[in-house]
Amino acid sequence: MTKPEIIKKVRKWAEILCCNEQDLEIVFKKFSKDENKDDGDFETVGYTVSNARYLKATIYFNTDRLKLINDETIVHEILHIKLAELTGYLYANEEKAKADQWKGYFEERFVSQMAKIITRKLS
Image (cartoon, rainbow, N blue to C red; front, side, top):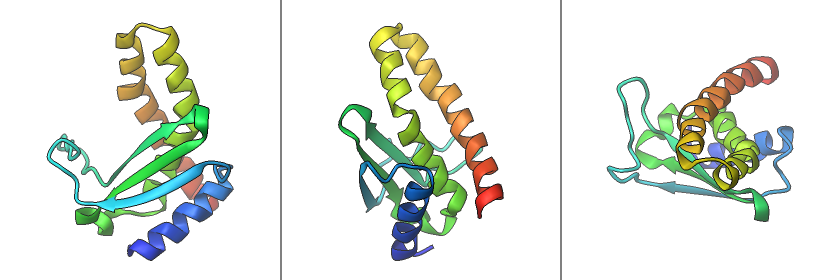
């Protein structure tokens, strides 16, 4: 997918998923070694940084892997924005280890599953 196509699709899916109230920035960059957290099961094509309190989010896409980006990838990243408020609450009110477990496993699993469901139904 090209950069303009990705931008257009991010805006479309943000509206569908009611994230268009966010100050949403889309950044294309070559990922550093730390950002490329490949574990053998997937290749890192993007990640999201979100601040639910201020309704700001940035989706970063790896310029080396743009060909791997599809609707499911985009929806996956937008769903991280939707869960940012819950994740922030957990970090503020739970032990860091529990919050890390939520973010590292449960949130990732949830957004992956929901992205598959949503894109199958709405694409």
